Image (cartoon, rainbow, N blue to C red; front, side, top):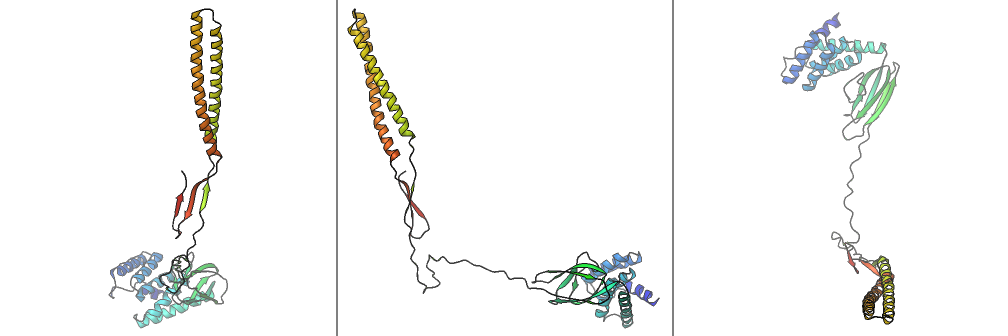
Length: 326
């Protein structure tokens, strides 16, 4: 009965008697309203939020009392234990009663299906987070004993400047389980910097011998010439030569026919045709001769191999120069 009365009294510890931030005061008032409405879980959350705004022991005590009334023994033991350790400003009688409540909770934990885990964290400011939020839904700071219901849990230890370390534990007995976690420091970022160019003089090291730059020999880039123009020109030249020969032969036929003509009109007609075909033969022959010259030149270019582009590296290796026929 005394324990029940103590919890009710602690759940409504007035917080307005202290000079505290308005946000913490408002959260505490919401917690008290939740207690009056019978919503103890909401009340515990509000008291914890008030403590985060203004770390006063009465907020921690009220959160622990709410969890105790909810029969959440691990959380009740944690928050009421912290309240006792930091509650020097509380009434001495209340504080002594709180200590007795914490002892009674611990006795229930020892008798129940709970395992004490003695946590040692390095560095000391590291935090331990329990995945899933059971039995604690906020990080546990530093070393100490915490109580776990029987089961398997995944924990994560972390600290600024250190590598996070996951740990899996399984608890199923009353014997205390030691858990020591030493975090490794996070590797520092390595600045590689700019590597010096070995082919350039280092002005920051005047005694360093300067290695002369070696200019590589020029590279000749060749490209084969197309034979298509030469083939086309040769074909056209041959066609013109054949045409000229046929025209000349036809002109000679007309000349022979004109000499055998029996009248002047027939002679004149055949004579004109022979002259016309002879002129066409001369024109075709002239074009064939020109084509022969062009074909010869084109075959000369097609069959001759010569560098099209000459690539020469400059002395400092920073550029190239192009030289050749285009």
